[in-house]
Length: 89
Image (cartoon, rainbow, N blue to C red; front, top):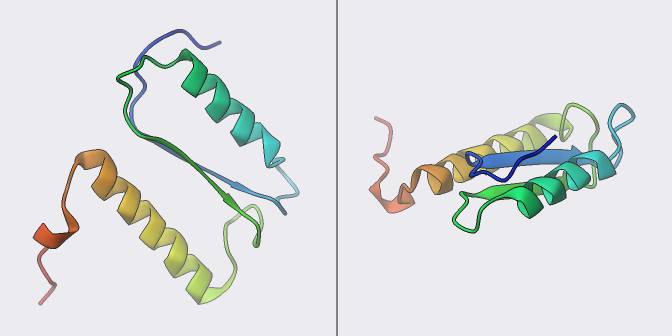
């Protein structure tokens, strides 16, 4: 049950090959959230992976790509500028 409100920033993920959760379920949920959200709502993104499964992309490269997308979303949601990030020492 969704009520009209301003949801927090949301990064939803789905996988086309997920045997536990159909890819359409997160898509329908995000569509309902967008329909019930106020016009000034925060960031609401859906990423659908066409490879991988319930636990994300396979392998080290897929894992790192998933982490990079999550960090990029956090930067976007928090209003940070990647140019301001300090390099690790």
